[in-house]
Length: 64
Image (cartoon, rainbow, N blue to C red; front, side, top):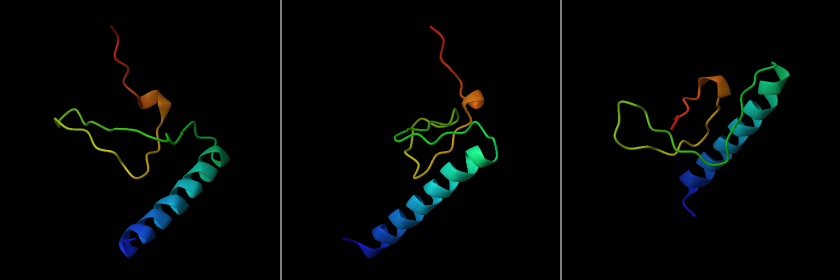
């Protein structure tokens, strides 16, 4: 295993835990999806972030 990947994964894990604990503690409605793709409106391609904290009220929903 690449040591940089291990350190990166460890940091990502700790950050995810901290955000998951602090959001409800601060009465924030945020959640962390297990998998997500983020596509900025100004870009053609999406990316998969290491950690994503979502405020559900800011999600744009596509209406058919």
